[in-house]
Image (cartoon, rainbow, N blue to C red; front, side, top):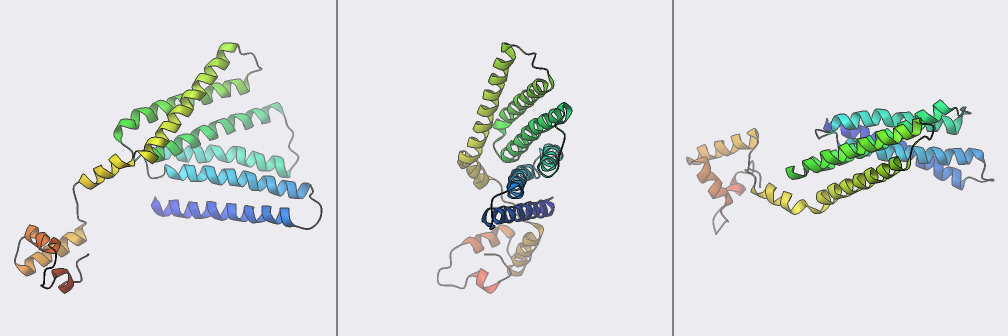
Length: 245
C-alpha cells in the first residue's frame, strides 16, 4: 500500500505542477487576456482542487477508513470531469446535468472530509473513535439533506433550513475537534509510544543472540553491557560494528 501511495502522490503533484505551469504561462504570455487564458486558469483551479482532494484521500490509505478514501476518489472524478467538460466544450446546461453536478460535488466533499478525518484519527487515542463515528453520521446526514434539496423543486419549509444549519454546525464542530486532538493532543500519544514494549525485528534479534553467545552471556546481560557507558575500556559496539548504535 505504501509504494502505491508514493506513486499516486507523485502523479498528483506532477499533474498539478503541469497545470500550474500552464496557468503561469497563461498569465505571463504576451497579448490580451482572452477566453483561452481564462479556460487555462479555470483548468488549473479545477486540477488544483482535485489534487488537494486526492491528497486527502491518500491520508486514509493506511487506515481502516481506506474504503472511504477509495469511494471518495471515484466520486470526486465525476464533478472534476464535468467541470473540465464545461470549461472546454459547450455543454448544455440541462436540469439533469446540474442535478448530477450538485449531488456529485456534495458527496465528493463529504467523502473527502471523512477520508481525511479517518486518516488523521487512525493513530489518535481510542477514546476519540466515538467522535469520529458521530461526525461521520452527521456529515452523511448533512450530505443526504443537501442532496434532497438539490433534487427537489424548492418545496421545503423553514424547519428543513434550521435542520440544515444544525447539522452543518455539528459537522464543523466535530471536524475541528478531531483535527485539534490530532495536532495538539500528541503528548499523550508520544508518552504511550515511549512506554510501549520494545520489540526487535528478527534480524537484530538474531545478531544480538549471536553476540551474546560469542561472549558466553545471556541476552539480557549482553543488553546491559551494550547500554552501559564506556568507562576507560573498549566499548563492545566499537569491536562489533554489526551491532546498531
